[in-house]
Amino acid sequence: MSHFKERKETDCLNCGIELQGRYCQKCGQENIEPKETVWHLIIHFIYDITHFDGKFFNSVKYLLLKPGFLPDEYLKGKRASYLNPIKMYVFISALFFLFFFSMLQPVLEETKAKMNKGRTLIDKDYESLKKLLNDTSVQRNKKINDQLAVLNNNVKKQMEDTSKLDKLPFQTTGKVTYGLAKKYDSVSQYDSIQNALADSKKDGWFSRKMIRKSVTIKERYGNDVGRLLSDVLMKFIHSFPQIFFVSLPLFAFLLFLFYKRQNGNYYVEHLIFSIHLYCALFILLFIQGLLGEFEGVSWLSWVQYLEWILLLYLVWYIYKALRTFYQEGKAKTILKMCLFVLIVSFLMLFLFIIFFMVSLITV
Image (cartoon, rainbow, N blue to C red):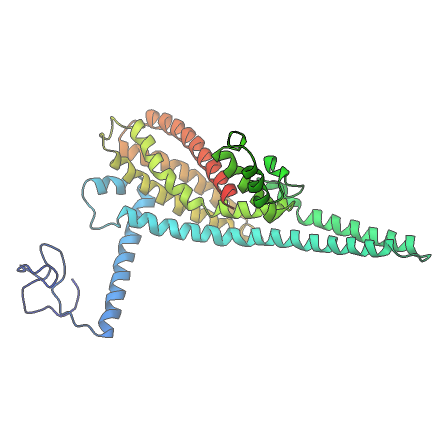
């Protein structure tokens, strides 16, 4: 109950019915004086935040320490003491991806900066060589050899700066090949050629779309494959929240197929369980990421053991959540869990491929 002054009148200001207490039995609005001071607004804000925090931390405690407990409580109708699963997912996933992007962005920017710096040095070296080729002095050959040595040194540094790039799922050297688009230099050129053809010889709708997009990419990036893949990768990485959001109902549907007999025929029950499981995984991965930030500190080398313990806990958490919520034996739960993880891995791989292709098309 809040500490705001209660109205003497007993009619609800929101829906108009006769009240039987401090709160309206129909709409739930509190019967308090509508005129508020600035201090009242501040009190409202503090109350709402602390009320949310109380529910949030209470929910997280049960979410992490009692796998499968919260979705079971929700389906039993015990909901007032815990945060709504949808609100929990939105809040936790937002924090997780904010943290994820904040960690990843500096790494990508540093790699990109090193590549651009190396290319600038190499371009300058080539320009110097061009000037020396026009030099007719006796010292010409010596100057050229000296400049070649500088060029080779800068190329070597560029290779060293980008030596870690081979661990990324793409290559940043070489030239872009544009398939059918290599015949055209611009979209207008392609459209002009298509308009001159007979209808029977024109490309189909899908081919036109793909070729026009390919030509557009060719115009924008030329042979700069590093910049192209960098932009595609950034767009793809920023689609991770959408990937997990799309995978959530699919994940729940797989659970529905796996446990249809054990937990009823209602898909929403499996969806509630999936939301809570996703929230727990986001929190555990968030902690894993925080621990990873301390790996480079010499006196915190023991942190790597915590990471392994956390990884093992994550595996145990999935098993325990499934067993608690679906009430099956150990052997059957482990068997279903292994099969389920395998199918979900293929599902996530498929979604990642689809979203990567979309990133490439929409870059």
